[in-house]
Image (cartoon, rainbow, N blue to C red):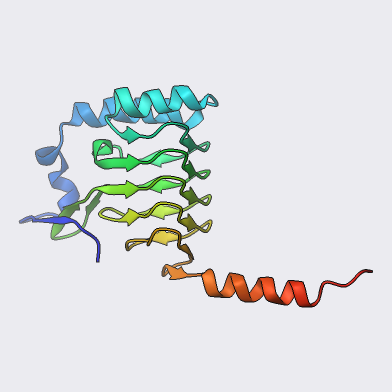
Length: 175
């Protein structure tokens, strides 16, 4: 279960209420900094932008790949531990605007975590230290430390990876 706070709205869908929850100027400012960081090839500069300009908590030696999209309105709700890798074109969200409500939740990514390319991380999840998230996954629930997960819906891939390894070892013959 994701840890989100729900805020019901009356009338039009929740996205029409966005500027009652966050300043439009904050959104514009953050958007500019996020776009600069998405294309920046220098990891230390990216991390500086995330920490100083967006208020994220980012550990030492963490690497964000090209085109990573962090939450525009609530980047300060994102924490990434030391020595983690966030793969190309990953999206990290700390908010959801639905029809009758919007939700906010902290995203915590541990240390030594590998997030594959094109992954979407939803609000309110924690990814434990040493976890690996396969490319293209949708992280809609917490991930245990050291787990290997992937897919949509998210599932544990540890067993299938070890079975595949066993098959490769058994059929490995010289040509």
